[in-house]
Image 1 (cartoon, rainbow, N blue to C red):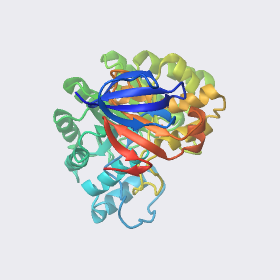
Image 2: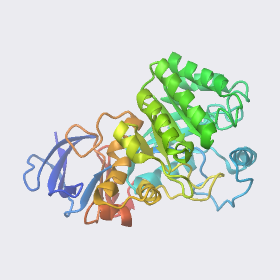
Image 3: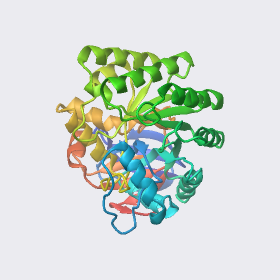
Image 4: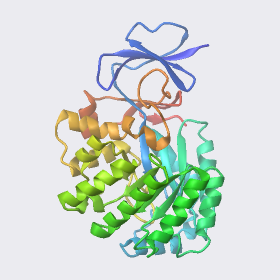
Length: 395
């Protein structure tokens, strides 16, 4: 079988190697100049090589990317954003396969090869958003992999019928179902969590709950989530997204909440937004509480920001949390790649034999240089396919 051989690249800034690709998989990694066998050779020119980036929290269905600029409107609260989105999305054709495709192209341009995307499921759109996202992903021929979280953006218990839609989405192949501020949106955290955990247990899917509530109210809900996760044997299958409260708690209270999450195997997804309290990342790392980075929405009715570059999100994480040393800066990049493998159900995600052939080449001295400059991606291989070359998309 003919292979593709990517020559003279520096994984994580280490000594140059040749990487042999067989289909969508990395077959072998050998010192530069030693890889044998037939196949097309791609000269890596001594560039820095990183695994493809993993976006652990996206909203592929919401964007107006590719359309004329949409001005920000509505109230700057969670409920205000929901109401504004519900009023305006149909007029913008949201969700649409074309806008989702445009966002996915930007993800690939910046080296993201795997995505966990929340997709709205509500009484207005039903399951159509999931169908739209799947249609867009199919157009890339396996280059980018997307896991779908069926997400009740408009609430659960306050919208009778949404639980049934989430159950249908799980039955139809969504890998997780979402929740939203059980206390402040539904004003009934026990009922929302009863419904969500019931579906997760019955359908064998994961949970990923958006939690914007801060302080003690947020901490109370995190503890509820951790206790239910533990009691139902769902360790490793539950994620809190955002979870701003964790960074706002006094140190002793924070430690108790952190211990509960560690015991239950609850992970965290963050977009490292400015003006929020830093997470206790060292305590999370040391206790095995997984952290994934995401872009959240990209140019949507919630925010005009976003360019699809998860490496910039890693930089935001580093700046928000005051990371300075080489080890800490490398850790931020790991959060955007190897350490996020579990969010997309991968056992391994790195430049090693047996891993999916997702590789990003950058003109950078080392990992730290790549993080702070976020240079353009010179080459992106996604599932064994060259999708970016000399910084230009080929898909």
